[in-house]
Amino acid sequence: MERGSVIETGDGRPALRFERHVRHAPEKVWRAITEPEHLRSWFPAVVEFDLSPGARLRFGVTPEQIRRYGMDPGHVTEGEVLRADPPKLLEFTWGEELLRWELTSDGEGGCHVVFTNVVDDRDTLAPAAAGWHAGLEVMLAQLDGRDVDWSPFDRAEELAQLYG
Image (cartoon, rainbow, N blue to C red; front, top):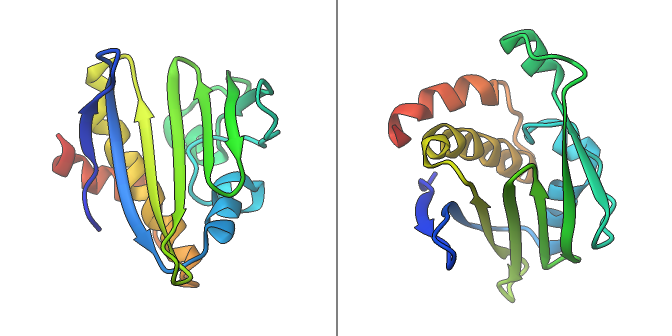
């Protein structure tokens, strides 16, 4: 899978950008990025989306983060839905970060996916890139109907050298 890139935003903040072409319609990809039953396998937090702009979001730790890293099960980070235009655009904050999903139909039943994660701290780019890369691999495998018999956490550790 193609590696993500680092870009600068208009306000000078660093961001990760991943672009993928998938053989699935934007509506199917939209479900993978917004519905809890899909998110739980690849998204690095427990979250349920209220897709109303201005809606408050709560991001909890996953059972795997508790087991693997000893994270506090009660730890919650907040965010807000900034824009939601199903199945084309989803933009929300997660703490101080901004996450943006753009889904564009390719006219042939598939779509172009652009995911951007704007961060404040440049030091978080490499581990975040490895984590998102691994998560996207899981999401795309599931969209394709392929079984995922590996941990996205282990995969992120493998990918860390690619982004380090």
